[in-house]
Length: 134
Image (cartoon, rainbow, N blue to C red):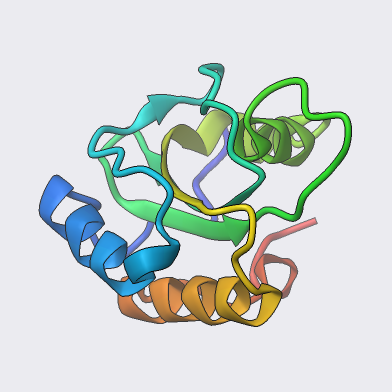
């Protein structure tokens, strides 16, 4: 196993998830208080902000989805699959993910704001390519 390149600084907890869900407000489609394994399907959401944690539960990445058609599985699960395909360090580091599924009519600007806010509150870099080794 390679050395982790981002071990996280904040543990993701159900209380922290609840706080992020409150930030999503009326745009939150469904409250999901438990993390999923990387291979687990996230549901049928189109818009979402997702938080990836390592085996210790430390938040190590936060991203967002954009609607894609046709939707075969949850957008968060599909996006994570694209992240980890061919990326050994991510497959080794990332253990689970939390999903904030958002309503289909959520404005793109709000999804961007929520992603940036969650990243800031978790102490995560805005763009991983700035800190991830080649």
